[in-house]
Amino acid sequence: MDTRALEHRRRIKAKKPRFLRQDAHKRAKFRPASWRKPKGFHSKMRLGKKSYATRVQVGYGSPASVRGLHRSGLRPVLVATPEQLGALDPKAQGAILASTLGDRKRELLLRQAKEKRITVLNLKVDEALKGLSEAFAVRKSEHAAKLTEKQKREAEKKRSIEQRAEEKKAEERAGVKEEKSAEEQAEEKAKELEAEKQKVLTKRT
Image (cartoon, rainbow, N blue to C red; front, side, top):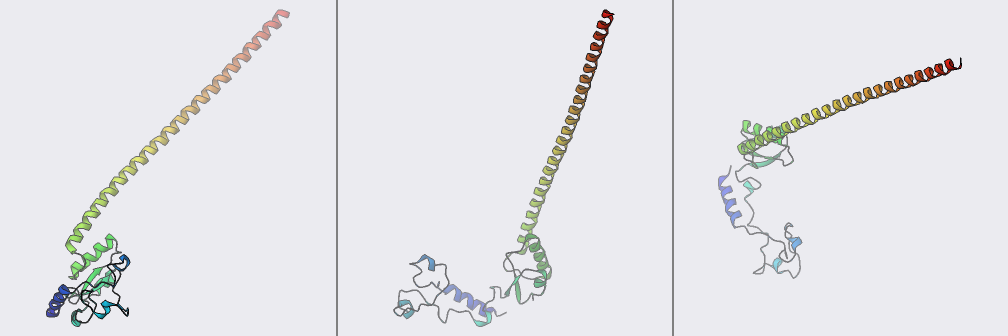
């Protein structure tokens, strides 16, 4: 690791101006855009006139030996799988965990990096692991609460179904009793009619 070159780069970067595209202060659409070389024939910025924005030129670049390196001196490598993490050289390369990772996989990669002593450049390993464990605990409690609520709802649903079934059975029983009573009334009426007929017949005779 060339520490002198890294320190030299740090000093250069501290003095480096912000390179703005020509007319970026006049047009909002030019501000977030990347640098564009001024090519106008009458462009004062292209000619390097005073009081105009600084152009990209030789002298602002980093030393070739440390170009593209992290400030720690490690070369950053994007990692998304345990295989990619295992292929890194801890002395020369540092891991940058992909932003698309889920929490479970992120925790797995962080633990693996801690075991193999691989530097993670875009996260603090201990803090990230602590935050993930807390998040998992919260999710677990929420999941347990949801399960208990679901079980309660299912129990209430079961009770209501049983209650409805009992009510239906009671209604059926009441209906059977009513039918029986109606049959009994019909039989009694029939008997009364027969008795009256017998009385009439006895009187005639």
